[in-house]
Length: 356
Image (cartoon, one colour):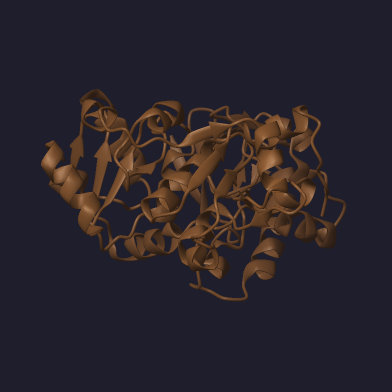
């Protein structure tokens, strides 16, 4: 087997693809496309721009991605494609869930291959990208200077209740409760942040809230720690100091009330604030009239804009992201409710909605 390096700037200025050739047949069999080509999508070119590492490079990167697609179009349909990411990654806007594809399949079904010219491609690629997670800046730095080897990292210790309460009370650490949203809502330690560990977006969401200078702990079963660490290591969160088993958190009585859409609507009429924490494209497609919009990853920095004297109903697409923010706000002293089922449930209930 021979690997040939193809220079494919666009997602980042230094991006490359590895072309795999079977030397016995002396013809390529596939491509490791990294973040250039995904199943059903291509890598976004705006991350360095959005994270401040290379301001003003989004359009130039998009045009380079157009050239990459033209190059890939000229390749044989039978070539296998092994992308660097799948569904759940923030490196694109519509990544497929299957682990591999072929050039022929992407030519037929990938929207990037259907754009008629460079201008249409650039407009399509830059439109509707999700917010760039904060951790991309950290990953860029680690990729440049070199991350610590995994075998040198400390294994997180199982810790007790007193340590958990101290970490939350002193606000000098982030404690991520990885239990499902429903279990967290039923009972938890106030001040912990609920990010469900079983969700494929776990690392992306965690990256919005982790401060690389603060200690991080987990609430999770011992059996779940390895896969959680793998997910967090992938975004440069290497130092998890310890973990607490779910039984410690479950016995506490702090709860986040889950409310039905009709109840949320009635409360809104009485002056309760609805906070929409979805992405920009989701908001533009459909939203609740009169709701306040702050994307998930911006709530921490814009929290001071939210009035403490008003009850806040958190809302997202399905109720999971809004629960993350509900747990965050609750820990800062806000009175919060979570819209169960999110915008999907609101629409099914036939309640008012608007576009734009």
